[in-house]
Length: 428
Image (tube, rainbow, N blue to C red; front, top):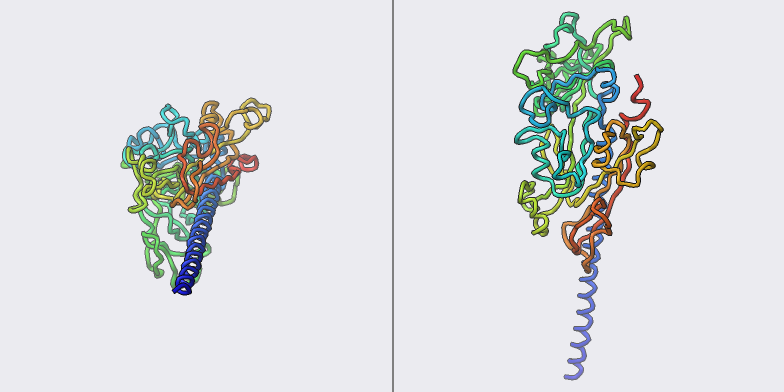
């Protein structure tokens, strides 16, 4: 009996040790997996944000500053005008001018500068949605052309003079469909318009025409389909959502014998155009729905179900979750100040050069680089001890005011130049 009791005691001791090792291994595995997810989400978020901002203010082969200096940009897309009321038509200041903010600081909330200048559709615009869905942190704005674009087909001389004629594409593009924004440019002039008719079946006719008998193109939903040579070509119609008979474009493109290039044809290209706003929102982890209005506070009162995320509002998709478990974002800017002495923002000020600082001085057209900071976290509490998410000292710091818990928090930081603000991009 004594030997049996000793054997049972030793066995229980060994089983307890094995269970302890298993529990510890499982905890270590969960911790390692959580750390990997945080790094993956954080790196993806800052890389995508930097890529978006790097191409901001691009108008194809030109920059917004150059287009403004030469008065060569014509905005037909009504929903990007008159930010206070996007329903009133093509009046007011465009939301894509070089003096428009690229960010809004969290300290501006409650002031006249908060979200001022965003497209303001009464029920679905950026100004309306971001105001209702914002949780904390700064707001980042980016807009410009997407991808390489495609050439517009060379029209006949009579067609070139008709500014209301739809823009016909040489090569189909799956993103140039009804409701999307598009930009056409020949590097001397630029028009921004809304695609009002879907690209149903665009013939993949190359210039010079190819000898292909069967060609691939895209249906209105972006899926590939086969079109034979007899299929009608699709169009990107530049009506801009207007109901009146104003011309779709400000000028004819693919013109021959221009003032600056006599005897040549300036080939025009058409680009998809995207206007995006990034901000931290509150998501329901069970349904995936973005919280709006008062329920945004669910992320503070019920963090086990409602989790912060980086959201993106765009002209093509509306408001959507972009990256999960991003709890804060801060953006600061640099550039040359307006004194004429060639002094950088960061050299001349001991303050934080965030959106509030830039807006107060009217320096948005001088900004040429930005620093983006985000704070990523885990959905579950995986640490054994309770600790503060990150050390902060003032309200402008990343993670300021966050409650203590057992989640992992990791900051990510990237600095990017804005290509369209580079000196080589601003020269005629």
